[in-house]
Structures are given as C-alpha cells and as structure tokens.
Amino acid sequence: MASHDHHTHDHAHHHHHDSDHDHTDEKNHGDSTATSWVGSDGRVYHSHDGLAPHSHEPIYSPGYFSRRAPPILSRNFNERAFTVGIGGPVGTGKTALMLALCKFLRDKYSLAAVTNDIFTKEDGEFLMRNGALPEERIRAVETGGCPHAAIREDISINLGPLEELSNLFKADLLLCESGGDNLAANFSRELADYIIYIIDVSGGDKIPRKGGPGITQADLLQ
Image 1 (tube, rainbow, N blue to C red):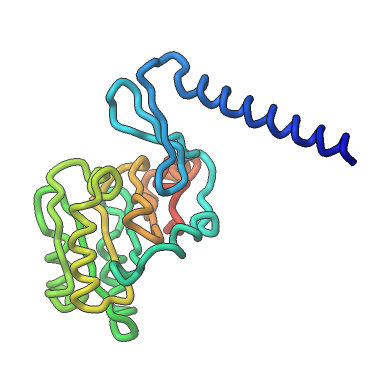
Image 2 (cartoon, helix red, strand yellow):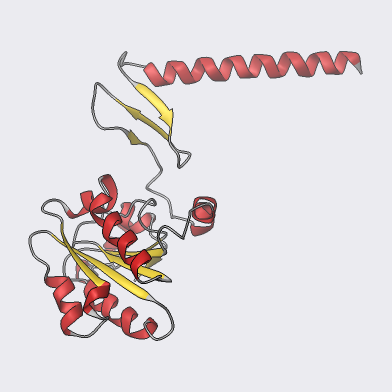
C-alpha cells in the first residue's frame, strides 16, 4: 500500500509540473508579449502585442444550450430578466419575429423589447406602429457602427436599456433584436441568455453548411 501511495504522489506531481510547463510554453510561443487569463465565463483569453483580447472558442461545431446552463443558472435575474437575442442578416425577418413574439406573449408575461439599427430607429418604430407593445416598453438603439459590436464586443449600449426596462416594468422576458449582419455575428452570452438566429433562405442550402458563430452558437435556427 505504501508503495502504491508513493507512486500516486510522484505521478500527480510530475503531471502537474508538465501541465504548467506546457501551458507556459504555449502561451508565450512566438510572442514574448502574449498574456493569457481565464475569464469569468471560464474561457481562456489572451492578447498579442496590445491587441484586443480574444479566445479560441470552437465555432465550427454545433452549440449546446445545456453546456451553457451553469452560467445562466448563476446569473442574477433580479438585475435583468431572461433575455432572448434575435440575430441574422438584413431582411430575414428579425423584426417580424419580434412583432409576432410580442403579440403572442404579451398577455401572459411582462415583456419589453430593444431593437438595434445603425443610423435610424426604424425597427423600433415599426414595432410601435404595429402595436407590438406599449411604446414605453420599447427602446430603439442606434449603434452607429458595426451591428455585431453592440451585441458582442461592447454590449453596454444594449445592456443599459435592457436593465432599465427590466426593472421599470418588472419584466419576465426581454427581447433584443440585433442589427442585420453576417454569419460571423452572434450575441455575447453576457447579453443574451438564449439566441435565435434567422437564416437567409435566399442564400441557398449552403448557408447552414458554411457555419460561422451565428449558425453554430445559436440555440435555435429559424
């Protein structure tokens, strides 16, 4: 028994040393300025030569909602209600889906909605004109740049209105529509708890096969 314990100790120590050594080599390989750290979401992030930090999350395999359950379960929903993000290319029907969901759910739940456009508030105004929700429950955000930046890289422009609406109306559910973008666009999990991505059917059957974060990391494709 003593011999077995000694072997176990040596093996564990040796394995731990190698793991640290390999991680350090990989982290700094080819770039003495590279730094890495583990983010609050559990992913390993790193930066190169002062560039913006990023991770190498697999984006070529299907997303699994169940694998993202722990971060969702630990989130404080008193600060912001469960948030559904709706994304997809221009003209695929994101705003029409927002309208349909509002009309279907508004009598059962306390809802609020945020829309994104680059230089206008057209989608928010569309929802108001068509009576999706009372106007005070809708916020139209002008991102003023790449639509994906407002839902992934810098989510504060959407997070603020969503938190405000959630607290003001004691919302059960929040809907957030992104501006039209390509297959590389997807919501940050810090912003959307559940992601619906609408496929551009006019692009042909190759679109789902091509993948991209919008396809592989969404929870529901429409």
